[in-house]
Image 1 (cartoon, rainbow, N blue to C red):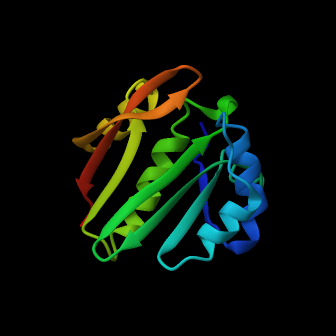
Image 2 (cartoon, one colour; image 1 turned 90 degrees about the horizontal axis):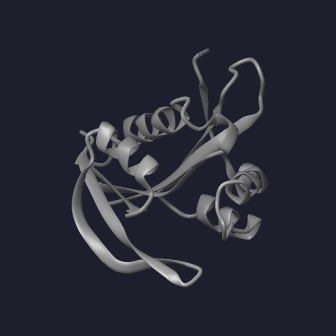
Length: 152
């Protein structure tokens, strides 16, 4: 596999992020949602390109910093690129950038999302809490697992 390329997002990438999010999630966020997030203090995002020579993103990570903590708000990788370490590259990139300011990074993930849980656990995140019945999919519900780790 060729090395993935990361690129910092700007407010002008809101439509691209909304399109990617729509390709990954059942309830996608709107362009306005991403515009509001990207315009907020302490919020940053990275896109990943599977082919460094082609400016075509296949995923992104969005995080926010408050005081000395960073929180991953969302991460997505299009299905065609899953399993190719794109999520790992995005998370490591966010940890590196956020670590210049924050001491700890947190995130939450659905208990039944084993792929994402393996990704975060493989990067040293540990369970720090649980939000019961946080996610709803159809008639079923899943707990949110809260993960955290030092990024200093």
